[in-house]
Length: 66
Image 1 (cartoon, rainbow, N blue to C red):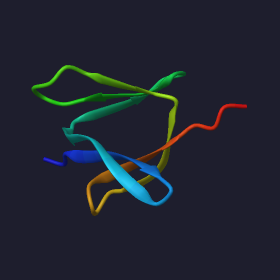
Image 2: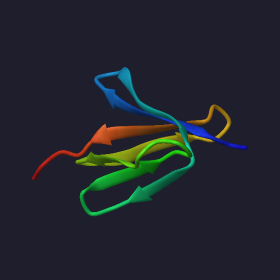
Image 3: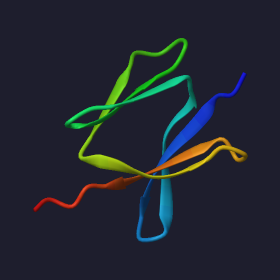
């Protein structure tokens, strides 16, 4: 199985959000993360910065308000 870790990057530092993510849904408000055994987690005001498929990591950044 290919389960992913999701982090938020801020000024070069990465903060873990959730491990073993099985699904990521982009919404108008941000993203919703799902795992097998935890409740879905909504992360507001973020955008996907990059996805490292080989490393199994999705990097999010806080969305800048206009």
